[in-house]
Image 1 (cartoon, each protein chain N blue to C red):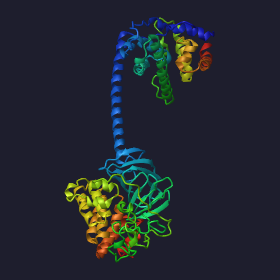
Image 2 (cartoon, chains in turn yellow, cyan; image 1 turned 180 degrees about the horizontal axis):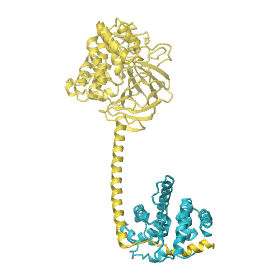
Image 3 (cartoon, chains in turn blue, brown; image 1 turned 90 degrees about the horizontal axis):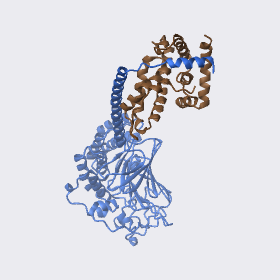
Image 4 (cartoon, each protein chain N blue to C red; image 1 turned 180 degrees about the vertical axis):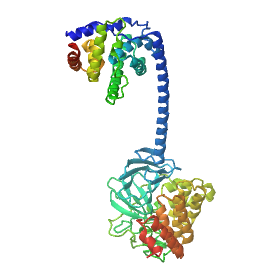
Length: 439
Length: 184
């Protein structure tokens, strides 16, 4: 042991804390005060943390719960994604977000159907998977509906989507719709939307007697102004273009009267060297549902139209009104789609589907009913209901077109200038310039 | 060097029901003086002891429920006291580096009990002055060994290091203190 160690051993005996009862009480009092103060701080931090958590959850919900996970979506509620895209599920639909990132959003449609309004974003893939069918968004708005375990109906409201299934891929533009997917086990894959060359269906037109000659312009309301906008110029009006219509009531019987129409009628909008599309009989449907909603959900729009309630006042929810309008449009009764759409916009202006209803109303009025002034008002209303929404740009562009068709060139020019100012790099600049007569 | 610290003799454990956990007040009444003594030897300044005692028992509050053996509580409180004192010493060095340590000229002789000899009182003052210049880890290890009188394995336990590290720290501090103080 060193000398220092020996000295310290002796010295440390003299080190002592002066700890008496008074000091013990004083320190104890301070200890209790600090304990209470820490408890308050912890409580405050807990409250703050809770508020942050609640805020984060609210933000996530508001952002459309863009993270993965299974969601049973209420029929009446839409889900908005972080990028502003909107999914409007039909009754009983179930969607699962498989992937959500800046570059890629993948949503699986497990059952039912849903309408998607997709915000344009270059470089981002928005993909909806439904069984064997995958739909990649190139444009902005479309409906995907699972009819059976293997077949899926895709209808494009406007813009363009790429549909992929086991047989290849197809591009659908505004107004197009089709049933995709196959029945597996080596059976043929059905493309009711195609009806193109090589089709096994000699007459994809379900009403051959009413249209004995191939009609390159299926729109019954011929447009004197050629429309350069792809979503409208190539639009295949489902209410009249039976060559691309996938009305399940007809596709289950692809050729109801083959002897009266010996000549195949290729689809002018899709027969462009694409792989042969072969409509096949749909799987045997389940026992026929009676309710018009069930019929519509099953894609039987003709039957659903026949079962529509005579009094629109009994149709109350926005979702039902939108479905009512879809049934009317897709069963080739566009005039009957006007009332439910107007009702939806008037009664449920705050509903996230109101802008879509207004936009659809504009399309029906402009494309199917030849009422361009009313269509222009509807498109303007779609913009007013959601000025920053996914439909705003297209609604403004179509408003320009509507005013042009109404021969109100000053209004068309004014709205065209507004479009160019708001969307100088917009996808509809050319058509807007043309309809606004700014060229 | 096997002797127990003088403070152990004055700690009189209160009777504890078998298996009963101590609450904060009970633990304080039983071990506050012990913790204060450990803190004083580690810090060398009586003015900082109360703060360390409070901090130790606030830290202990969360774990007391799980401890029922009085001896385990005592040892564990010592470990917490070492940790809290170490933080305070590091903060003190930082303030000293910034020229903001108000008690840098503290008279370490005052920590000696009233009955201590003048030589012991002077030795303690010189030793603590040198300790102030040492790394905190070395200071704590040496203080536990030579001022607190703990055995080497207990020093390692209280410092949360290996026995070899504890020895190395003690030796490093001892060499400096022996050079600065031993020849006087």
